[in-house]
Image (tube, rainbow, N blue to C red; front, top):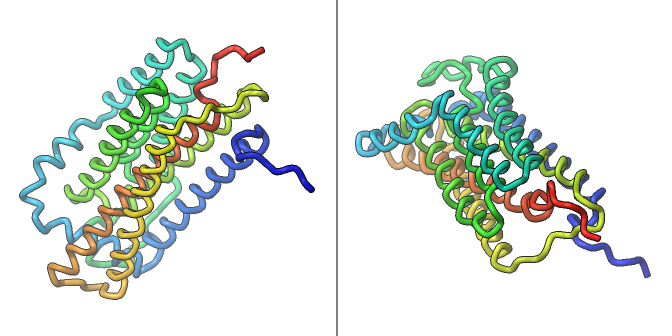
Length: 300
């Protein structure tokens, strides 16, 4: 009988292959989101229906949305990135600090390059509220990448709490960009995919530095929390996808309030699910790619 293979993370080569495959899947999904929601007429209609739906009740939440968005700026990103690195350095994890800063900076540079240099938006919907390309969302990339970054450099015993706060902040920022009329839902989802790809790549780098004999210690409480993130993310993504599919059959003019609200709710649910999925990916990487073993001496 052939020897039974252990979990994918137990073998360095399998772990590296798996993480690189996850990064490739994130990139493929990012391209798919762009092609469907930016390069097709019906996709643009669905996205814009979600954006028009944000007008329902906007006066009640616009102040809160602006408060969330006003926190994000270039200077705030720089200071937060330095803070992420400082935390890792103070924990005597300089390699982890460097990789986390690479994740944050790489995610945001990638988003800006894609939005301004690579992706373009054809004018397929004359009634579009925003006529230029806005995919991926810069604000969402900042929020999600920093949430992931702080969770990665946090001590293992605090990681789940930091992850919950970071995922909530990232999801709230993504939905706030919609509520303020700045971004369509596909923009925020694409931002989460950019962060997800960089998280997997950083995990792959960490795996190459892991000592061959090291295997992550199982932690039941951590596994339960990680599973909760995954289940909630999948539930939100499924609900959002269903709402957007229903919207696709009512465009180009879902003029009734219930249909517009459904489009908005579907977009918001998808954005929140994508933010949670990105954080769930980080929790998997932190436990199984050996990031907590970075900078630590090999065990005899």
